[in-house]
Image 1 (cartoon, one colour):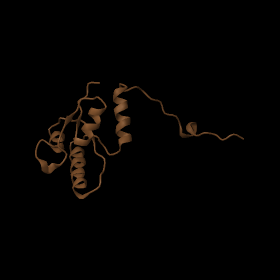
Image 2 (cartoon, one colour):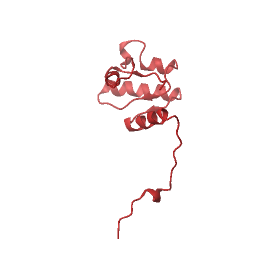
Image 3 (cartoon, helix red, strand yellow):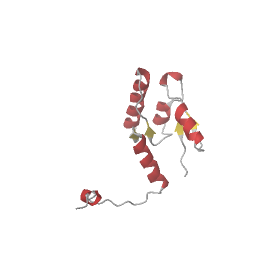
Image 4 (tube, one colour):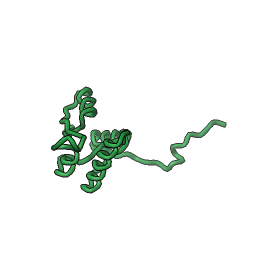
Length: 111
């Protein structure tokens, strides 16, 4: 599709298993450079997927990742469903979708 993928270790393994090329990057900010914050700040990436995980260190790193994305005005998806929808929109080449008023989508019960 023409997009380069960067991911942390676990995510990179899933992307590779799906047959897509990916460059692994360090997530843990304490593990040196380059890390996620570095590639956000240097303009390497133009969107971030960062889901919230448990534990003090992941929460703290996640906060810094989301903050760096916000400061650089880079979209940051915190839900895989939303990230998937954005990726599908990119793959579909910006295909135009139409929206209808809410009552149009409501199903009517017979009788």
